[in-house]
Image (tube, rainbow, N blue to C red; front, side, top):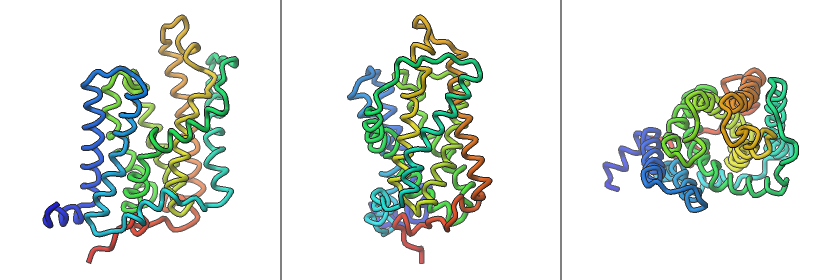
Length: 293
């Protein structure tokens, strides 16, 4: 990069991050949607590769600003957060699943208790989700964008800004008919957006509460995404005789979003919107960014 470009990136850190994150992801995942490639392991790997837009954007900005890439990356290896937080990371997704299933059953949704996936698959889901299935994004959204925003805004407002950017960034998945997102009707897409904003609050709480552990956030992210495997309203239930039931699909999405919203609101009440934690949130130094002169 020329010195003028580096200077522009340093002066416009958030804008540069968004431009690079969107540019990389939309190029890779947009090309996949345009190519018409069928669903496969190769397709999944390429989708996951496209998900590296946020960390790539963050890395470029940290580097261009003369910051410490090592400090920024170290957030992904911050595992000393205490047993309490690791218990939350692994058990809260289960609690959210149980709450959602309970609401689904109470609302009259049918379930199939004979087709549970093996618990051992969960470990693969966690590993996959942390590296390629969502967690890879978090060095960007949480490890960079969040601490930069929190230098100026409250944790809640910062979460809302990230929710907007995070939701829009997923657009290529909605125009690709081979992805889960691509098959959703408008009602499910809107519910997904609600879940994104609720999730942004949960992820902020996790990041701030652990003192800036992107690893905890990424594993938690993978756990939340993976809970769908264990919902007893599986494909045969939602697609009786092979035909999708729009009402059951909508009910499944609604009862999946409600627990996230309930937990998010509870966290705001308990911890307050300013910090969403019992400690000061990490600032831009956590992302390896130097102060401007």
